[in-house]
Image 1 (cartoon, one colour):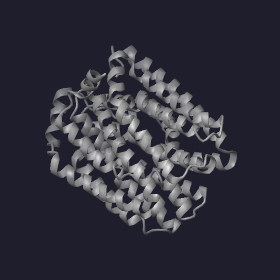
Image 2: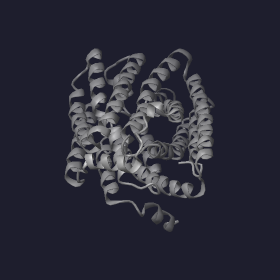
Image 3: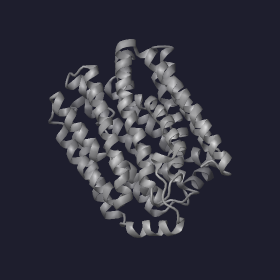
Image 4: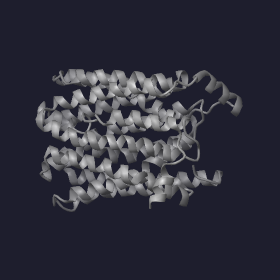
Length: 404
């Protein structure tokens, strides 16, 4: 077992570890998003539907921001995009706590995510650049490890701070974003983006392919969107369900969030290392993870026993570990250095679009038809997504010896 963990962490470049350090600093303060639905309903006394609108605007801004981030990453490079997004996002989070009117909060959230979420494709492109084809999945998993280690700290501490004063969440989240930008500037050398693009053009010869003309990748994005719409209930409606129907307090919800992050930290790198050595058609692994995610929500239909919350958390975490690293690797390997920002931008747009659809669908279905119907619909989304990923895996494996 010790040898397995040792092998899982070896072979990654120093720059990959430095980038993971940036994410660790940033995500250790991630507190606003997991408690945003509670902040809006409990502290600002918005209705569930109003909270759903704010969360949806969060996603719409993210959708635009990831699109711009992907374009700008290919044009000026991933380094400046990351620095600017972290700095801007940090200052906006600090400002956001002072805005309490519904209309102005909607505008602020939209602007914050439009410029702040340009970070996503730039960061993924950076990890792809500093990794190789053989260790790229593990590099992305290390990034997720840093994110979730920070998430476990931020989620656990956030639950305690929310019990004292919700405004503390904005201060901590904002200051850690600014700290991550400073660390990135200090620790990671800036690559020559122009030379990178010129070398790639000479290497590949043919014109770079647009992800918006890649039919298989577009279908992949649809499947990923359906999966993420289900998974993102973890951030939007699931905390509300735990509080209203299972009697969980903010500190307990923070513990659930921390458990999700800690399980990923302890298990995911070794799990990914083992699976990628055993399974060539890696999208099959993602399809299994997608199904596990849908089932983790559907079990809430069966009982209101408070302990069922732990069952959901464990299995939604398992589904996440199986699905996400291999989905991101597929997106990165489908591109090259000239168009990677756009491919990862479209991938991130799937995330952003799910941030729009998840709270909107979740709040509307839960309010009108009840939470059991919502969990059943999310299971249906997961089944369709898994079937699509299996089909894509078959198409890719017929064209190349290994499903990337």
